[in-house]
Image 1 (cartoon, one colour):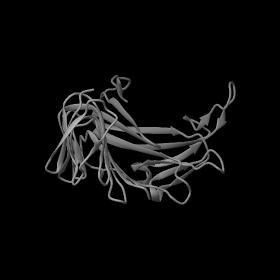
Image 2: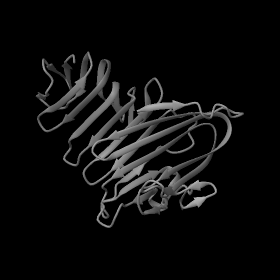
Image 3: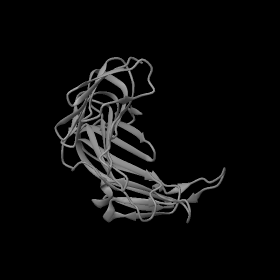
Length: 275
């Protein structure tokens, strides 16, 4: 979901706020906020949390648990490790850190406050990973700060099960860094310890990882998902056109799509299926 609002356009130096929210199954939420202005501004983000919370500044995250038996969730923000984040609870001026468990009642609750200053355009990134467990915390990293007018975010997540690179593109053309580039509004590449590879995206026509083309389509596809296994390529898509997926030694394509046709073309599998 991507949307914007004009609530800050009445400022002396107008600022437009745009937000993209991506839910990545099974349990990751990526939030990207783009603030576009000209002069200097101060910003403050407040994340109201639903349970006891601990700020882990050295890990760049906040741990939230609903109870002792809860697996817990981690909220990562680049501001946490940079010293621009703090936990507040039950404040009255300004009003922050409250929730309403039932009608006509309010109770103090943790609130993560993220503050900073920017000039021109700034992009703020947040990543929430649910069900992390106490001993298996994922590692999450964001792009290095300082790049002005950046209209994309590359969020990298590493767990025991996989390494995941997500690209959120708020621009209109191809964007990204050396780890992942695409013209998609959202694209993701997952690498597994056994050598397996999975890629998927929304509104995607081309996907490049570390200079190597992984996917290329004759037209941008509303949705594409491909998983490379030992001897098969599992493929699902929505849209019209031919899609070429780098497949290595894969010699078969498995899909639930009706009327799919494919052929091997060097390192790629060319797939035709209009849906």
